[in-house]
Image 1 (cartoon, chains in turn blue, cyan, brown, green):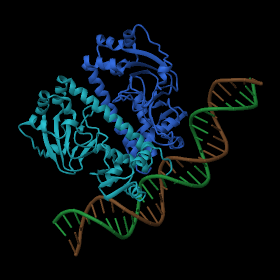
Image 2 (cartoon, chains in turn purple, orange, green, red):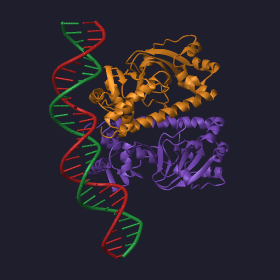
Image 3 (cartoon, each protein chain N blue to C red):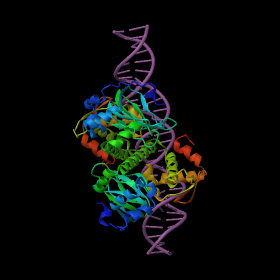
Image 4 (cartoon, rainbow over the protein chains, first blue to last red):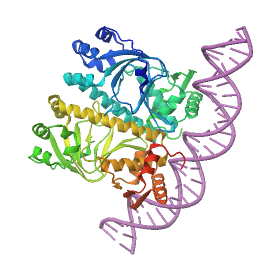
Length: 248
Length: 248
DNA sequence: CGGGCTCTTGATACGCCTCAATGCCCGTGG
DNA sequence: CCACGGGCATTGAGGCGTATCAAGAGCCCG
């Protein structure tokens, strides 16, 4: 079942378009493709809501009734095997557009890993709007292509990189996500647990922990707390992530 | 460099739209989204060509100048690490639409693994056509979403499945690709080598060979020749691929 | 008939997983 | 205030699955 529908928790407001104009995620999301007039049409079919940490709001196999746009917080997208093995296919932060499922059902599940705010769009209404606003459709196509490139990179990581290369790649990905404009940040925050990092990288918590400890011992990173990482030797991490350091 | 441009090998014809109407891939490709009139407009910007086995016609990092539509044969899409490690992100057969790269450069390489025929579309011209034909754009979005779902499934495979589960998944995927309409086929053809299967599944040739031999010994499949597989116990393979058979 | 390729099979090595114990942090309640 | 308990992270010891290395078999094609 779609938990979020059972407990709506809607924080909707009567001034949807006004909220859009002030939305933090405005400039990094699909909404950016629209001018103010069209944006109000988009806002008209949107409903805002808040989700507490741990809330599963998309379940794989359920009827794909809605699209979502994250405006605050982080969610994980994942698939499960019957025995509980989990693969996280991505983390989605503010601006991320969710629900590009083909066909009638979602192909993955989604869960808030910290308090989240998002906009919900009903599928048929967004489709109708897409028909009217080619800019919106073009933007969605662009979004999908971006996802595809990211997915291909992740397949390379999962299929062919070592544990240390995976963790290095992950840290740099986080750094890039935090500062989109190559705005070299050295400190990053990890809103996810070790278990979630492991399920994202196709490893175990122990391996994540060991690799991070090793990086710290080698003075490549610093770990003031488990959820804060300082990249002290970024060039080395980049070489490792790219597969340039064979057996170091 | 884009090898296919250095040696064009164009088998173009003056009656592009006529060729389209007779194209084997017509009904399973993006072209299916268009009526005959619009199809001729699409054909006008297309060029047909043939590629011999081994020909690399898209190179990762090169300027993304063209889109491609496979009409015959099979190509592999892949990414490389500097030391030669390879991850095949997918195999593309007739009807497959290629080149949905975001930005200016291709994010992957593509190589014909058997003789291939394809249609080439210049990027700017296809974009212009997309602007005029919303049906085309919608179809591309749909294609991209399909790819995305496939990619997520592959991430689950690469990150969390065992070698035997991966090979079972692969065989069933091949069976589904050969007979799109759940047209239960028991025999499948493998146009790719063991090395390519290995690079697709994140394993080695030896593991592929061992798992297939084991499946045969257990009477789950038959292997009349290395490139032909007969699925003799499909339900068991399906259970294994889905992760339902823990430690068999 | 030889050369090269792919595929198969065996022996061994190693990277990551599994299992287990401990430490740390923090919220809770006596 | 501190004792207690539960989650999460860290660290160690040992095992397993897949990789690596190596040899031989089958096949195509000249």
